[in-house]
Image (tube, rainbow, N blue to C red; front, side, top):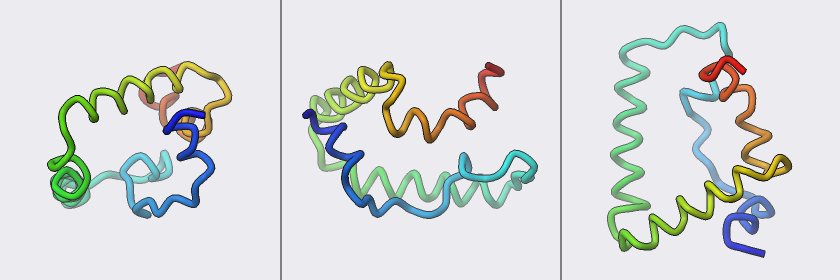
Length: 88
């Protein structure tokens, strides 16, 4: 089992605030976008800045491969969001 599939099995401690988690009827304010950008900057420093570029590329590549599997947990979770952006 590869690393990304193992993540599906973990009790992940994900932040409880993502713009994509908002219901479709929610309006997005400039403040919300600003806060989301600040969170991205903090997360970059916390999770990515110390990792070698090759490791980041490998994780993105593994994620892309996993995303192609219809039963992939994160793909199923994000399907409603994807539909909003893609229209299908």
